[in-house]
Length: 487
Image (tube, rainbow, N blue to C red; front, side, top):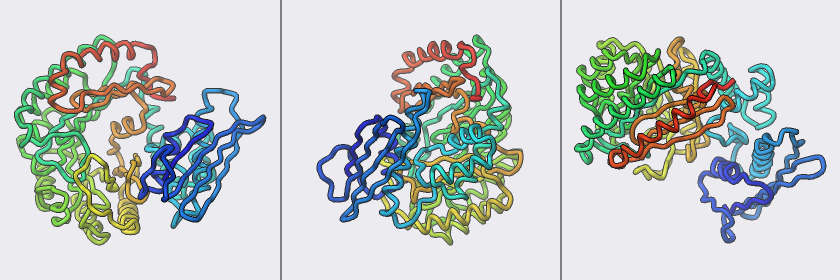
């Protein structure tokens, strides 16, 4: 689809709506005439109103959508108003071309609960926020309630934080093998095994530098999350070295490590994690159907997952997350239902249900499952999980099947605060390791991202240069209220 925009600088919003509502099409800006269609967005400012108008053509059908809003007296809000008007106008123009009404309406952002928090604050109550999402952005009622439920959890965690609180992420960019659906920048141990030990050496040095800075500034680490990759690809002794170095950062009340793959979990590694105060780990099957696991390149079985969970419980862990993916090739609604039932028999405290997103960086190029099959999987998951779990965070992605979402579910008392802080961007996250992204969040909600080199070899080559970012982090964190939760 050919995209054009006149009168405003909101290309990202237009492109995201086009991708969300017409994911099967290729979209290009100001390209030559496209036989698949075109969408022209025009923003104009009159004496009283700001108007967004979209003309959308697909085949022989041309439709128009228009939205008018009153300008805000605060010029800083104009960008948000333009985006709001554009997404409503685009949605109205697109609706006659769609086979069914999208459950998320005119929302295209990754973090719908961010809008939910804003609406709770502006409308005065969660109930009013639900109604606003339905009326203003055409969100289906069940999705609006889900959004506000997760927004309430973010508000609760936000209110528990002080201006000296930060969170820590530690990245381990290695996996035993690469799953075909994965687009993360990580190296297989078979291909890059020689980098693992030098990487651990460098990471422990980086953590020591970070700990020194935190002590100087007087910040408090609230949560620590080690992800990847697969952190338990490291040996027990390597995990011990990294966690020993991380202990100098402070004494967070929540420590999470992604164990992920059962073929990397051993009693020795679990003992190390437990000894370092790690209270929450992930054991992620993605599916409990062996033929599905084989189809996506995961060299383990459902039985291996069950063995790993027995080891995890024996090691003393009482907060475990398990991931499932709806929409994997070779799966089916009945197969997904069997996977979820088998996972629930293991009684994890958290279950995260993802929808497969076919990303450009992944090796998987299979034909996606029909949208209606994915919808059945997610509806079944919500029905079953609602019996014992509550949703506490969600996010959406580009290229996600059927314009659906990813949802984290929790038993009472087992919310992963790091997931909420990171996803909702309600506090500063200090990140260590290759590919990790530090987010410096101001009290007003402005975010500065400092990105680490993506690849392990690049991280090692640029290590000394990269340590210089701590000067910038220290300067930022020294500002009053810089690491405060948004209020």
